[in-house]
Amino acid sequence: MKLTICHLYPDLLDLYGDRGNILTLAARSRWRGIETVLQKISLGEQPDYENMDILFIGGGSDREQRLLTEDLQKHERELRQAIADGLVLLAICGGYQLLGQYYQLTDGQRIPGLGILDLWTIAAEQRCIGNVVVRLAETLRAEMLEQAAAPGTAAPLDTLVGFENHSGQTYLGDGLRPLGKILTGHGNNGADGCEGMRYKNVFGTYLHGPLLPKNPHLADLLLALAWRRKGLDWEFPSLDDRWEKLAHTTIVKRVAPG
Ligand code: GLN
Image 1 (cartoon, helix red, strand yellow):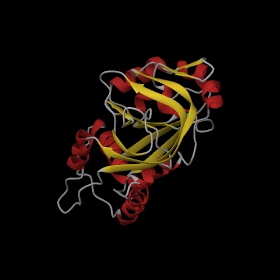
Image 2: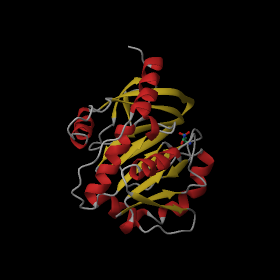
Image 3: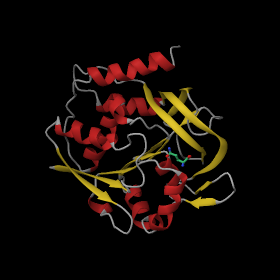
Image 4: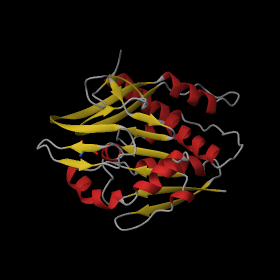
């Protein structure tokens, strides 16, 4: 049994090590004896949404977001259906913004998003840059605990760590839940204390870094959701995450010591 991961616009949306998220998903699968197939889809190409397990969309500059917006609209119908069917999707920063209604630039122009998720983004003059620590939402943490519940497994971390660099301020409509509350940094908009978004199996976040190597609990949740969606009744083996957890807790201690 194989896991298919698709990287959308790898040549345009891949900032601050975003590709490391895919390497992490592939490595954590391989360590459990699961082979992964990576598909790279860029301008003019059509992904096979029905036969993919995880879709990844990274971050990009305003220029790159603008370059691909017309092409992206061609994906709208199939991607909307795939999300409704439970496709596991991780979208970072610029990719996260493009799932929503629009991204309004400082000059008032709007880059249209896919409009699949009820969120919108407005650029501020001042960029949000720096390290971020997020306290995970209880519901998300409960899901992580459930999938890591093999006997002898240590409780997963209860924070996310990463690096943000965006001018967009994102606002969530009713029905979208944030990934958690900001302990350090700005997150979605620097005002409501929330970071990221969860809808069905879609995860949007401003965290680069890359995100998943230092947040193995989130990587495993994505993998577990993808496996479950394939209908596999499989006890998810835990991995030795001492280095990943050390990297994570070192950042927490450094930037959010409280
Ligand atoms: N261009 C977008 C912004 O500045 C996204 C940036 C990013 O993906 N890091 O908000």
